[in-house]
Length: 223
Image (cartoon, rainbow, N blue to C red; front, top):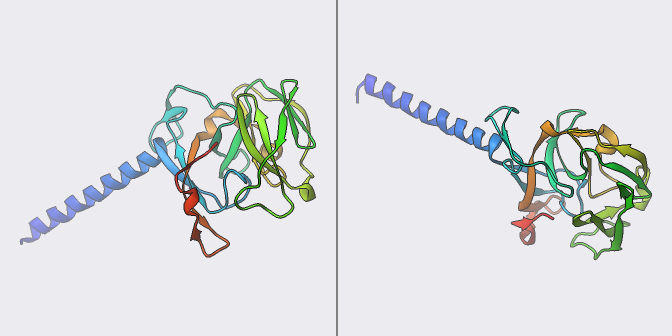
């Protein structure tokens, strides 16, 4: 094979690789992505070692490899689990939407009130991997119910005074209420910082047991 043909072949392969990388990055930035979970701030819903699927088309369409919005068709709803960039340090975080634009919210001893109505809480069954000393409750957000975890020994953030969510922003909380850095720490999250909705656990590995697969969590829908 001549030198010229080899150069053409090499150039073709480089072009294919570049196009493949570009398409993969575009897919992850605009259509769908995954997020590894390193902390327990969303327990018992999401565990350390989970890899969650993120639907980046849930709310809008972004220009590939940018944060620019090409189209918007829906806003996050109360109870959605979303991935967003923290207003504090730009890190990707996973939390639950609690307060919508215009909502008036407060919390007293881990009991949320939204627009003047105190939420209902019921005792929940223990999860598959309960944390020592934790309490588990079922929290009824308007239109959405889910489990939450409380740690009585770490209850220094269990109350905040009445506040109104600004237009164009959202109030986020972790389901592990006493061990989550969320809107109680970094404030409201602007709409443009929300990257997508977390919809399922793609796979899960127990980081405390040599990354043993948690087969029962694979492909589980997130509530």
